[in-house]
Amino acid sequence: MEGYHQSVLVREVLELLRAEEARLVYDVTAGDGGHMEAFLQVMPSAGRVSGIDRDPQALQRLRQRLASYADRIQVVRGNFRDLQTLLAQSDQGHVDAILADLGISTLQITVPEKGFMFSADGPLAMQMDPQSGLSAETVVNEFDEEQLGEIFRTLGEERAWRRIARAVVRARSRGRIIRTGQLADIIRAAVPGPHTIKSCARVFQSLRIFVNDELRNLELFLPQALSALRPGGRLGVISFHSLEDRIVKEFIRNEADPCTCPPKLPFCVCGAVARLRPVGRLVVPSAAEVAANPSARSARLRVAEKIV
Image (cartoon, rainbow, N blue to C red; front, side, top):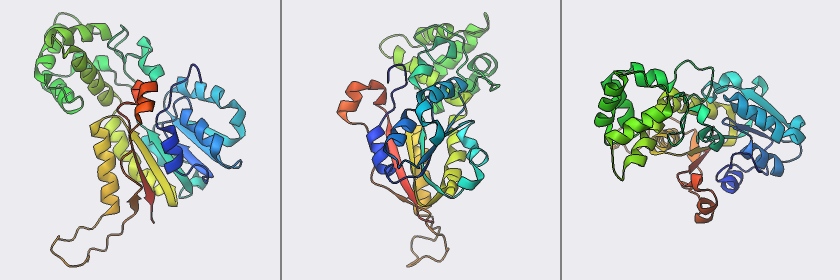
């Protein structure tokens, strides 16, 4: 639909989360409702979908988009890290499918005022929730060189992290850095040549992840999602970089094989019970989808089913 973010791996999500059989679905990163709309189109007529997002503008677009399904949807503003609080009490332990798409909406990226872009000038914000306290401007101007370098290295996997952190600290001594264009120019000067664009992308990614506490949010969400599902219910997570995917992969693996017994023991004595089983292998977009939607290129979908 024109004017809306283009959701990724829609066909695969519907198939692996068994949308045609589902009666209660939670999309915990609903955005403007692309995946929700797809679910509603194939679910039984009595099926309900709840959408959670922390961006009020996205939820406004979602309500407009799904107006014809108003009696079958619930829209909640909040952070998926607080799923247990946001979940309707009667839904606890009865959800058929939960989807988390960890990608940032194209509509957020392409609005300079949001501060996510290094290719267009805007305020150095980067907050998914405009009411959250910490901004990228605060981080860039008030964190010391070591802290900045650690963010660029661990969350952006940027090789030139030392050089860029040093350049940021040097630049801010001449005046506060308040615009995305300023920061991008600092990175370009610190890492000239063919790798400039990738360095800008990695540094901006690292700041976005840090400002929005994205990895910690994911770690807090996953066990809550498992509790919310009914036995046989399925969890799907779409990630877009290795740090997120690693967290999801390890969570599923640990819940599928929780035994803590020494490997040499012939049988399990710890009593740990598997609560999840992986469904299929890692799913990536087809070449056709990437050609039609280049932003899908890095998407990775993992699905697991609750056992008990």
